[in-house]
Image (cartoon, rainbow, N blue to C red; front, top):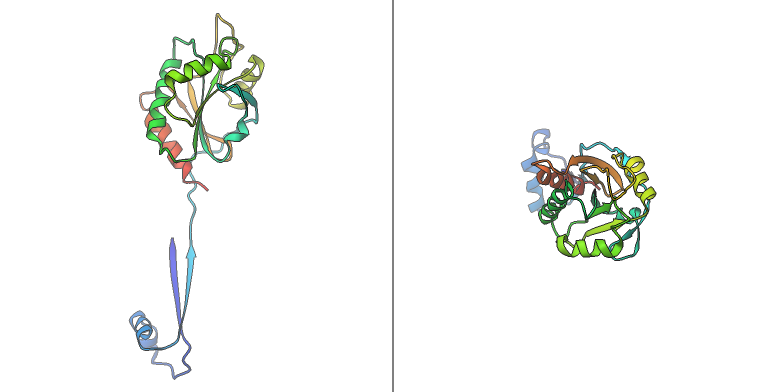
Length: 215
């Protein structure tokens, strides 16, 4: 923030010498001797802009929450949002990603406008009721929601929306990304980071806090 003060005499008396008139001590001293002073304060504030690139816009896809209610992803606008794609029967990277998400939520100020969204890539088994049961065991923050939908919608959302690998879900083979995607308050994806990386908590938390400072 830059502050600038402009001081001028308005008493109509003769002007003092240039050397005295131009000195800051003289101008400030006049405040104490009854001389009329006009004080103009110009304030220029510079809003923070993250260095994170603006990558892709999150599509306004409608999914179903673990509370069995429709949720449009546009509803996340106004909050910095951390997304991941998981499924509840996963025995590979998903438990690690969910554990990491739990740690991330605990690092973010509870009053900050931040959302956490886990989207199931196994809608055949991950019904809203199944997600609700899973959430009851792992969710540690009310801002964290679990979503599901039909297989085609979720695959299209992952591949064409988030630009993350995915394949149609089946009970035998489910392909999905192990990356977190971080979107800003305007629904623009700004960063991706591996959910199983050793420093994932620190990296994602840092990106979230950086984006929170943007207007």
